[in-house]
Image (cartoon, rainbow, N blue to C red; front, side, top):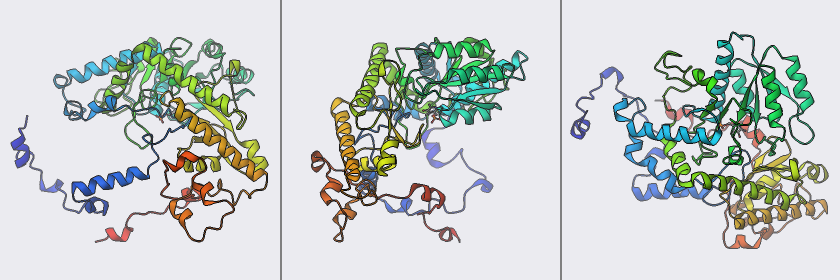
Length: 512
Ligand SMILES: *Cc1c(COP(=O)(O)O)cnc(C)c1O
């Protein structure tokens, strides 16, 4: 190996002239403006001050499980022992790493009730593809080459259909019943119509409608009876850990999202991990090593170029599982369910909860239906999402899985105080919607439509709105102690998506 002196002198690393870079690089001003540690520190602080992040507010994004990424869990990934290893380092240098990975895979196997786990996929969606390729490999190994139809309920996350198409399958959509569960009659009809070509069903449990489908075993049984395999999307595992196991209630294969349920930070990019977990009969088709031919090592094709995927962030999930222990993980699930049900029952009279399951309960998230209020007053779910920023909250998930709704997932990380603060904000917003209904101001001139309010907008001397500056920025009293001002006001999201404007230096600046 090379010593530090050698690295410094550059000896041993001499590059051929042909591959040495001669052009300028990192020319954007941001790379050349902050020259001292003081300046850099302030620059980073300025960026984080603009951000409405988890260190300031709950992020109640349904389906995303924005829970605490504890410092103690994250600390180790910056240690050189974890951070400085090459993905293709020889086995003799990775004993500890492999022990950690095997340990985590074993814990995830136990949690999910499957027979094996591969942490190779780099995202939930990649785990889906890995799982569907395993199903495909399984059917092909039995000579069932014609099995290529994948049933997907209408409520599914968009990645499900995309993964099925990538895996060479044909998507057949299954309808949703009035209560948000899978429509059994439609399911049976689609199974019957595709009996000989049925490859799999992809279900999400609890579903993206935020409810446990009480008939999930029956659904799995009818697909199995027709020769199909069951893929259980495990993105909602935060509602299952310690309470139910997809490998035990009918799943053949699932993905998990370690960047949701298992505390790896997400939402600002950064590596994710979407382990694929499966029953024993799928073992020969689980992700193999990219450096080996498929099936050379007893597994299928590689799903990611490196054997252990985003290994660098795995110590976070490992630490989470070990710190919590089995009892702690179960307790976390129960708290997440309690928090979601508390929000659903407190807000139901102001914003009706679209779907509830048995006993009128939701799972770990709930969908608030704004459509009737929108029809009556013109105030949209987007207006409410933007207005929440003025109250110091990150928006819930907007328009997914049902247009015109908000999906709220508090997770177990939020205490009663923060949840009550959110409920107070939502109830106060509902009163503002009533102000529109009562004609105090029109929707176009309401604090809802103009939200969020920047400091510049409310301090401006030509304030001529039909509501007061105070209502704009201090709609509830405690904001006077602790106020977040957004750096930008409302933009037309759809128009912006279609008309990209680059705020970088113009292309000509790169001409030489
Ligand atoms: C997040 C999510 C996915 C996709 O996971 P990624 O890690 O974002 O690729 C799939 N299904 C459901 C239900 C999800 O919530």
